[in-house]
Every structure is written in structure tokens, then in C-alpha cells.
Amino acid sequence: MSIPLISVILPVFNAEKYIFKAVSSILNQTLKDFELLIYDDGSSDSSIDILRGFNDSRVIIYSDGANLGYIKRLNFLIQQSKGEYIARMDADDICHPERLQRQFEYLQKHSECDVLGTRSKTFFYNPFLGFSHSLPLNKNQIEAYCLFDSPMVHPSVIIRRSLISKGLYNYREEFYPAEDFDLWARLITKQVVLVNLNKNLIYYRRHNTQTSVVRRDLADSNSFKIRKSYLEYFLKRKLTENESSALKSVFLQRESANLETWIVFIKLYTELYEMFFLEKESREVISTKVYEMIFFSRNPYIKEILKVYNTSSLVKQHTQLSIHLVNYKLELFLKKIFKSFI
Image 1 (cartoon, rainbow, N blue to C red):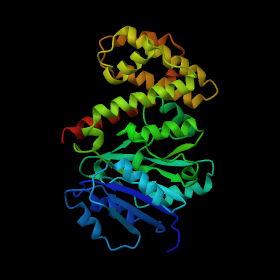
Image 2: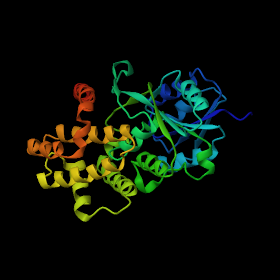
Image 3: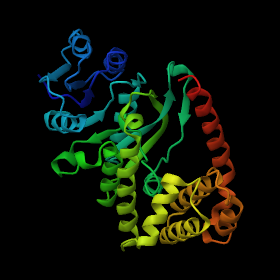
Image 4: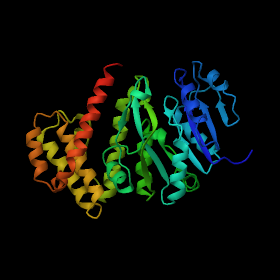
């Protein structure tokens, strides 16, 4: 068998409701030169039977009956992959038919890019009724966005094989279920270039049994560790106990965080903002994200917090915020509508 251009890696656990559409969306790609590596992680439903029903030589299924967790399975599939590029996919999502083709074409033209994601449409039942999820697009925007949250939609990414040989593409179990956020932060600190295509090429399903929902508290806890380490990398110093406490409080309990806590938080991100003095796009992201966090915090001290923000250097990018806030409000409104149907 010839070496495929792309290896698509897909871990599966009890996904009988969704796995047929997920796999079919890969097999129906306009780009045909790929292998699809699937590891069933000890499913107790009919997932493995559905997988074995696909009669396609590009599909390679692994199953040992054990339930060891999807991170172990992902790392195994990475090592088994043969393609020049490795694409991620999840068992409950759906790919646009041209996803792999468009990502491959971009990477062929942009040798500086090592990790390429895409925008997504989030949906609950019908992918055609989903809403677009805004993301940072270029290197500078992604670098700054990662100070707040994961900048990539995990099942949308495609990664160059060279990162494997450099020992950079692997997932760390201790950061489950925020292992992707950890990966992007680590790669950025190793000067790896991450980019998002401004196209919705993945339909990202939301449901009450997905890991990010079931393990929300653990995801928040590990995301805080990742965010703190990432901030310290750019600040080139350790956060003080007061700064660390403010960071945790604002991200996890922003509605109840007191004014003093918000002041410490704003000062911390002002320091980061001023470190990105050469990158206008990075500064715009930091300014916008801090403002959004304040504006939508529902905090009783919001007027006082905004006064602090407006006296900081962050406000210099305030004129850039209007379009971001309109998009953000629309996104929140649509999420509220769709969540009511769950």
C-alpha cells in the first residue's frame, strides 16, 4: 500500500448515535488520498459493529476491548500514522466535503504554517441550523487569544508530520480534558506557527454526554493551569499569589469576583498588552477579550470595572470593539436559543 497524503485519526467511545455520519463525512471528502485510523476505546454500545460495516480499504480499525481513555488512543494513532499530514476528527462531528482539500492546498502554499485549523459551525441536532464560531485567524491573533482560551477547534486541525519527528505532537494525559489547549500553548512557546482558515469546514456537535460538558470542572481546572503557565511564559516571570488568585477568580467566577480582583486582573492583562507593542493584531485581541469578559460578566461592579478598564492602556483599541461585540452578542443569543432545545 502506498503512503497516504493524509492520516485522519479518530478515537471512538460509545458513539453509536453519531459515528456513521462522522466516518461517512471523511470517506466522502473530495480529496481521496488518505487513511482513516480509528481506535475504539472499549465501547459498550454498537460503535464497533457500525465501524466494521464500512467496506473501504482506507479505514483501519484498532480495538482491544479495553477502556484506557482517548488520549492514550490518540497518541497511539499518531505513532501509527503514515501520512505527510495528520488530521484530527471526533466521533460526533461532521466534516465539510472539501475540508481536507482546502487544508491541503493552504499548507502547500504556506510552508511556514505547521498547524492549520478552521472555523466551525456549532449545532445540536441539524448541522444546517448551526451557528458559526468566531476564531482568531493568523499567528499573532492566535498567540494572543491563547492568553484567554483555546484558539483552535480541535477536530478541525491538520498538522505537519515534521512535528512528530521533533517530538512536539503528543497529548499529555494530566491536562485531560483540556489536552488540546495544552498542546496549542506548548506549540506556540516552541515558535510553531498556528493558523485558522476563515471557512466553516467542520460541524461541531454539542450534546450533554460529550467530555467537555461531563467533565466541565476538570476542564476548567486544567485550563487554568495551562493559561497560568502560558501567561508566565510571555511575562518572563511567575505570577504573584494575588495575580494567580485574580486570574482564577475572573475566569471561573467572574460574576462574583470583587472589584479589587478585577483591578488586579486588568493590570495583569495590561502588562501583557504592553508586551505585544509590535503586534497590533495581538493587542486588539487582548483589548477586545478583556472588554468582552467585563461587559458580559453580569458582575454588580461592572460600571466600576469598566472605569478601571477605560483608564488603562487597553482602551486604546476600544474603537476596534464595536464589530467584535456585535458578533459576540449574536453568537451568545444563538447559543441561548439552541441550548433551550437540549
